[in-house]
Length: 317
Image (cartoon, rainbow, N blue to C red; front, side, top):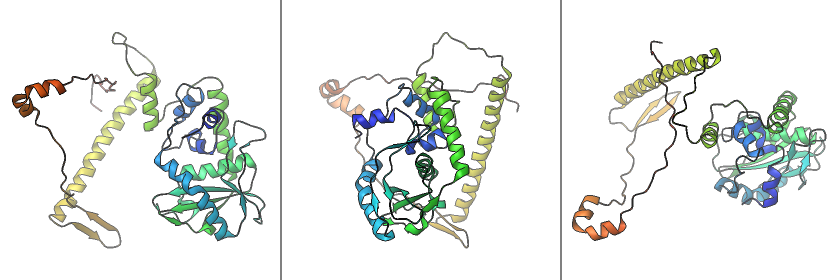
């Protein structure tokens, strides 16, 4: 669990783990969620996920093993801030001291699965951007990713990464905009298509006012409505096409467990194991043990949620 000091620190500025979010490419956190956190509208989660826990457990051993494999001495570093834009900060896992290029930023990661990581090019976008964020803040010329994936260390020689100046320039522009134009001015960003953004909108507007009808005679809104209608039709057609292809492949497989396609790969169609679960026959319980049923029966209220539906006047696209 994060300490109060760590939680407070996360309220100011952007660290390396925020890089993908302020760039708008994070799979886990939308820019909207990031801004709401910094504005104090939603709390920064105090919960330590399973991945975070094991990342903390393995960080020290990963760094030690990386140092042994590379011969590069390491030391821990205090929190650093960008010299011109102090809202950009970084907590480096370690600094490599005796590299020919001078001090380098070392970032340790523990992936439970291998994910096919062999070189820097295979890293998830959020990990790569976290490294470049650290180089942006420190001015260092190189980041080394000390990666343990699927229980094994990835070849460290393939995990050295130079400064990516075009990417850093774009990150600087994006981060400054989100901090200076949105957070500092109390504004929210345009929503994106992420699940995080959908959750944030549900948090901001959990209920509707039944009597309120909003009419917007705006060409931009009309354009969005038509685009949604077209996208829905295209999605329905794509899903139908996928189902048709899957069904034809199943037809070819019949009762075979696998379909192997040389030079491509294979499909599998296997029955899962039968399971056992607990069930209560409520009708029988009520009839044979009415007192027990009455003692245990409780009617609970289910919280309603807003449902977004598309209802065009005509559907002739």
